[in-house]
Length: 340
Ligand SMILES: NC(=O)c1ccc[n+]([C@@H]2O[C@H](COP(=O)([O-])OP(=O)(O)OC[C@H]3O[C@@H](n4cnc5c(N)ncnc54)[C@H](OP(=O)(O)O)[C@@H]3O)[C@@H](O)[C@H]2O)c1
Image (cartoon, rainbow, N blue to C red; front, side, top):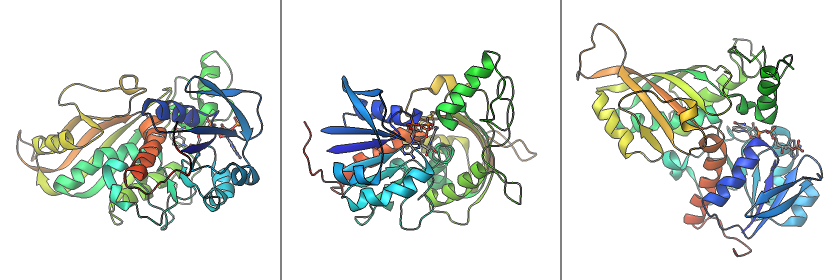
């Protein structure tokens, strides 16, 4: 299978290379692209792969079976359809196609059924929304979901290489360079993206709309406040939710135990450093909300929990690679070239 990776020099692209290797995806040829021809190479299966500027013409010429976009909204808007016309399946980490009704927004553990044979473009959802849905899907299945409120603690690598560089520069005493809305070193910044007329940020709107789409609950009440914190990698989320029917912590714990890709911690805490470079999403501190009705073991409809996941892996690279595996499994992706 010939795979093209656009954005191979970025933080998501680099993670995609590692995940393709680790999961032994049958790649016969890898083509790496960035914003322009580069004199750097990327490592893939012990080989140095040259990096070329991505253009529509080049994609047409290269004839990839799969093109993974890990670049920008503009690049996906400009080149994804051309890649499809040239015969490829597109896995797109940008937000360009996520809310397009013609494109499924898939987390393989949650809604693999959303994939249909006619689909050619597979957006990978917002990283915060993927981590949230991994935590919420077992609950929705077990007791139904009526409402969700979430406050996030998002790593700087969510803003790409520039985000990591900005934190490192400030740690060394440099001045904030505008990557974030306020200084990030020794600070937290309650703005990710620009605000709309209601005061919601771009990131908050993505979390709300994409969560509804992935859970297949278009009317679900979701409210989000998204915050950047000086953590290098992995997003954390404080989630408050109301179930359709009263349930217990034990019943929800059982739902997590049978869900793929989720690790439930009955005791203790989990931090971003604990989950860095892992594919699982971790749930801890699950408990009924403190109110006058709370009694140990009694059913409740209102709970809160702490959810943490590496956003470069499950929130981006791993989820995209899992979609490729799912398409191969379903016979919906046939390589025109065989694996070596
Ligand atoms: N970071 C995350 O946690 C995360 C999570 C989920 C989704 N995403 C999405 O994944 C994508 C990549 O993000 P990132 O964090 O990896 O960013 P990044 O570290 O800034 O890397 C961006 C990559 O895209 C390339 N690129 C930029 N414009 C391009 C263009 N017009 N044509 C071809 N390549 C282009 C860059 O190439 P050069 O090296 O030549 O500049 C670089 O390789 C974005 O759409 C982002 O929204 C990111």
